[in-house]
Image (cartoon, rainbow, N blue to C red; front, side):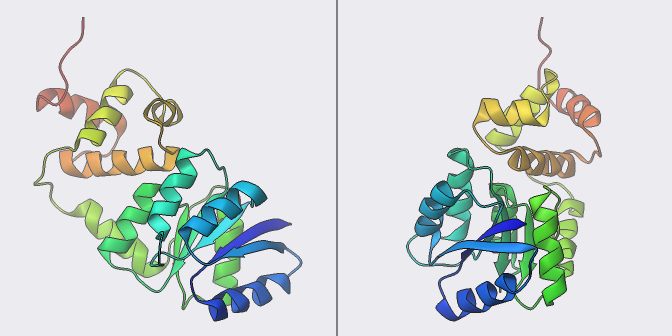
Length: 209
């Protein structure tokens, strides 16, 4: 049985989701939260397998909550469930460490599959979100690497795994993966080795003794 925490600022949405999941023996709803701050407190207390997280909420938004949960070492997987699929919503949520991203018009069985996938650490994205992310990754690079991307790349060049880099930078492993995807896009490469080689070529990294 997969345990859930439902986070949404609309009570009617929370009620609907609770009813939907409670009626299925595969899931157990441990609690609800009306904003990101409540979600953080509830997640630290209940330790659910999966958190269904809305994004645009008062007081503390979903992205901020996802970042703070990662910083506090909460191992619950976060599945974003929202109405919005714009760049200003999708990219920050993925960068913060969300395991999956679905829109609220997703069919019931698709939502169930996404929760099951999230519980296993697998990513599931709505088609619209996947298309948007692919468009971002394929966009020609025209901007320099950010400071955080350089930090990740430096650690990778020293042989660190994604998990080791995440631990040293105090961020989630999913966030490291997202930074690497951005590095690949900016440098026009497809893997870690090519990214490190390109970084030396372009002067982002310098040889060490």
